[in-house]
Image 1: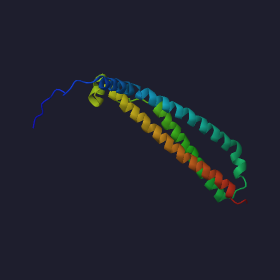
Image 2: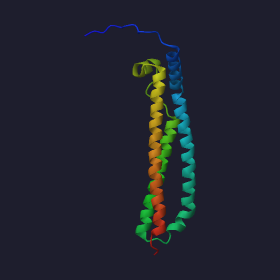
Image 3: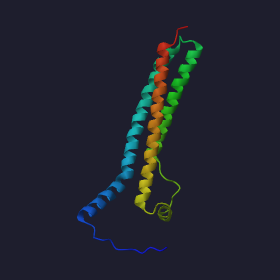
Image 4: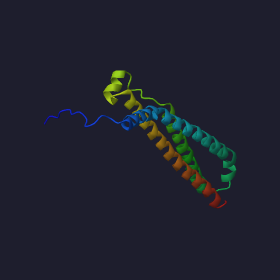
Length: 159
């Protein structure tokens, strides 16, 4: 079965051309926009980790000093896991903001894989968005663990 190219039934309207131009602008701004979002997340996560880390260092020992060993181990696991997930989220945000595709090194490679520079940038923006999503998920889990660790210190029995 073969197909023949057919001319369009009508020429593009001014609205069609304007829509095409707006879409082209959207495509061209996708990667810078995604990277700016990643930068904002990176900055926020760095501040969050600094704040929580400082609070744990300053207050942590006095909060857990009188806890039974099993409770102290549970609090340590929850808070340590929460901090680890926060750092993993920060790493994802850093990679999203600063990362690049190191496998494609030539224009021919980009054209072969993506078809055009515009589509390459859209693919990069999609990767950035995925990393930001992972960062958000890690931080959400981090908050749950850190909150659970804090609540555990409130309800744990004394020695």
